[in-house]
Length: 120
Image (cartoon, rainbow, N blue to C red):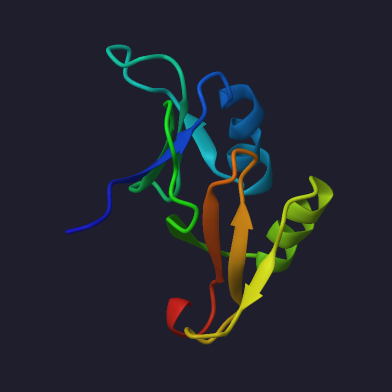
């Protein structure tokens, strides 16, 4: 069993504002959505298996829901987050490397974990 995708809800009409964060800041590769689906939103490849889907929807989002990404170069990722004025909240080490939380431009929480310790 493996995770196929995480779905992230963003406000309607915000894909052009939010998608660059996933591509340019987090370094995920944007991939095509199936033609049968609503063209709004965006899909990203994480590692050749797992994906992140941005879905434009009305309604509330839970402020603490999140997904986590293990990143190869956490300092470079944090520098890109800082360049776009993104937040970073460092958290206690539980896997043998740095970890913390940021938020995308729509306010969705994302945990970033350094590829170190048990995540190496």
